[in-house]
Each structure stands twice: as C-alpha cells, then as structure tokens.
Amino acid sequence: MTPIIRVSQLDKYFDDLHVLRNVDLEVQPKEVACIIGRSGSGKSTLLRCLNFLEQPDFGTVEIDGVSVTCGGHGSAWRKQVHELRLKTGMVFQSFNLFAHMTALENVIEGPITVKKMRREEAVEMGMSNLKKVGLAEKAEQYPSRLSGGQQQRVAIARAMTMQPKVMLFDEPTSALDPELVGEVLAVMQNLVEEGMTMVTVTHEMSFARRFADRILYMDEGRFVEIAPPEELFNSPKDERTRQFLSHLNLQRES
Image (cartoon, rainbow, N blue to C red):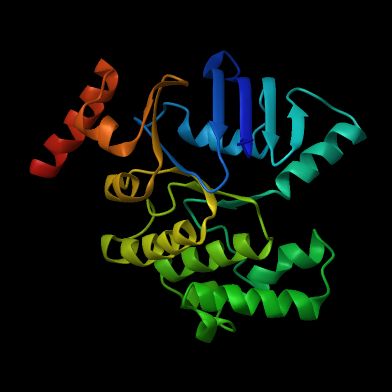
C-alpha cells in the first residue's frame, strides 16, 4: 500500500535551535498515528511542518501524491504548498475561530474563500458536519456563546468541511477543562471509525492506547521509538520512552 503521508529527512531550525532532526515518517491511508513526548521535543513543530504552517528547512513532504521540497520559493513552489494544504485539515489547541462569525460562518469560510465553493453547497456541507459533531442547533451562535468543547467541535467541523484526506490534531484537548475533554475525543473517535487518516499530537494516553495504530515517541527532534500501543505502553524498548511513561504513571498516582 502506498503511504498517504511520506516525510523524508525533515529538518527545522529556529535560529540556532535544531528543532527537528532528519525526521522520516510514513503514514498509511486510514491509519491513526499518535505522537507523544515531553514538551519541547518537536511534536507540534512537526505537525505544523506537514502543512507548511512552519517552513521546514530541509527535506521533502508528500501528502496524497502532492510532494513539496522544503526550502523552496517562487510561484510554482507556492502553488505546490497550496495544493498540499488542501489535502489536510488542521485542528489547533486554541480553536482559532473567528469571534465575529457564527459557528456556521466559521465552518464555511474556508470552502468559499479557498476552494471557491458555492455558498449553498458550503452551507449544506457545513451543516452536515456541524450535525456530525453534535452542534447543528448551535449554527447561528457566536464562539463567545459556546463552551471550549463546543468551540473545538466547531473547529473540527470547519476542518472537515474542507474535505481533507488527512486530519492533523495538535493537542486538541489541552486547552479544555477536564469535563469537556470527552466530548471532543468522542468526535475524534467517530472520525477514526469512519476511516479518516489522522496524525495526532496528544497527551491523552487513553485515546492513544485505544485508537492509535502506532505510537511515535519523539525526543529532541527525532522519533526514538515507534510501535503499536500495546507494545509501546507495556514494554517500551528505549530508556527515554520508559522514563517518560514512568513519569506519567507517577503523576497519575500522586
């Protein structure tokens, strides 16, 4: 099977700080890959490099047949980046909804302005996705009238309305109160069951253990261990992975 995501020799610097170090990654269609690791290990930077929200310095990124060589410039290169971005939906930690737009307006803005979709078609698709995340009745509400969990579900509906081939989740529950985490994870679970390809940076180990096909442990800008959940959580091979999981267990017990 041909990977839907293929990353080769990816490097990223912030000034003198080497954040990503020669990263290779392949993700198969319908696979759920969860990236875990300590804060500052490069997880979120990698996710943002996949759709060039951050510009990688070296390497190549290919998503669903669209390949971009990092470090390029010019109109042809920018067009390639645009085509690659259209393949991905991104859900951020902090929702990033437009405060002056209703939930539905937030959801349909991308398809109308980026994909030039007719408004009627965008509204139909947007309402379908708001229904899918359980928020059809909130379509005319502004973000300030929604809970954090509801805002994040709107953000997921917004990403889905762009009809992505891959969903990227950057710690989608980290800004939520504990009682709201479950409603967002339930929507993500539905996407998994529908066969959406997902790459998720997460601290929700229960989600990773239950739904990931592979867990990728990242440390100092590179993957140091990649394994199925049962193998990685129950018998990690790398000492850095063992220390990380041991620290999580100590936090739960305290």
